[in-house]
Length: 138
Image (cartoon, rainbow, N blue to C red; front, side, top):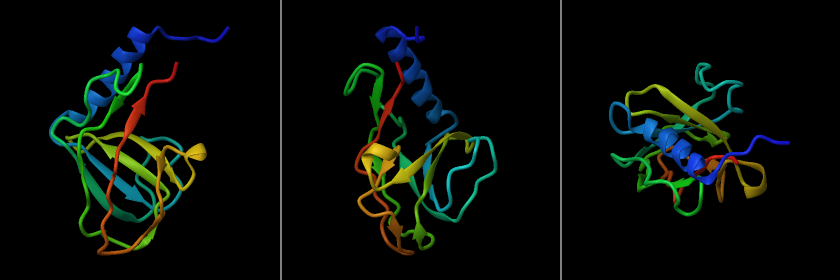
């Protein structure tokens, strides 16, 4: 049998996870070239293409849109990308600058965490995030 969690526990866990982003200030979301590191605690890899900024409270409460999920509040676009390149992973930094997590960036929703309509970033261009939904696995 697989280990599964009750819906109430999934909601508690996703709330704790996304609330950790708000520790010490406003959280940020970095977009980088190169595959994500083996472990989020590893040093950053790849070129920093740009940084988007979460709202003061990064995510709303659990249960939206579903059990074990939380939707990000407004994420402010990077109005002038730092460099040109192909985005391959994203790094989420807590408000205090410490690493929270990382995720891969792809074109196809079936194969990644952050889905882009175009993974080519151009220096000086805009990097915008339409929405983010964090999900706590069953």
